[in-house]
Length: 266
Ligand SMILES: [Fe+2]
Image (cartoon, rainbow, N blue to C red):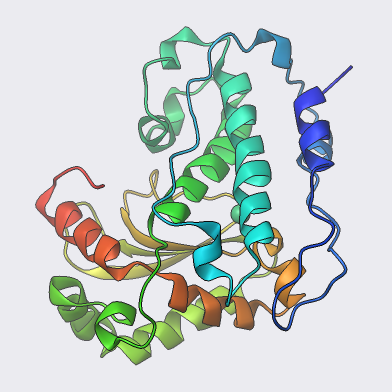
């Protein structure tokens, strides 16, 4: 039977998830199995002998954001959608031992090293896997009544002031760029180049990654409808409003300082 893992997990989409202001009717699930079929590639999951990539542990609980987005949506997003990307990239790379010891960041940074026959699919599934890892990392429970927790501080705040003219202007530009994207994608705040303290907003369609662009990411927002459709329907602006309240700015500040200094990021 083809694609047993993906088909099984698509069927696990929650049917009773509700949240404040949201709809009780679940949106149509993004069917990754269908996407794979449409892309005309053949993944044989029986060939997966070693799962190279896994889901990172979360630094928060799904319930931490229950006043913003239903925990069931968060759980489905990570444990079904993200897990499908993990399974897909693992299956795609399983027959290629030359990649067995490489990190997903190394692979995405050098697409030219991927066999041409799987390059597009590896960048798509690998990008989806890595972007989600990044996304979960920069979320965190915070005291939304404390300005120090809902606003960047330190060197990152200073850089935002220099490059965007203040936090509110940065936030407005980021949201505008994210809303302008037609279809699915990701919005990043990145360094303009490795170790360059200058900041840049990068919006990429589908599962585009900033890694091959050499624009290291400080934060990222998932703009795929699966992230918010069940809660906010097609209203991406409401999802962006919620996103700002879910950010762990301490993590973003640490990432910025590490990236500028050329140190590994958490
Ligand atoms: Fe997502």
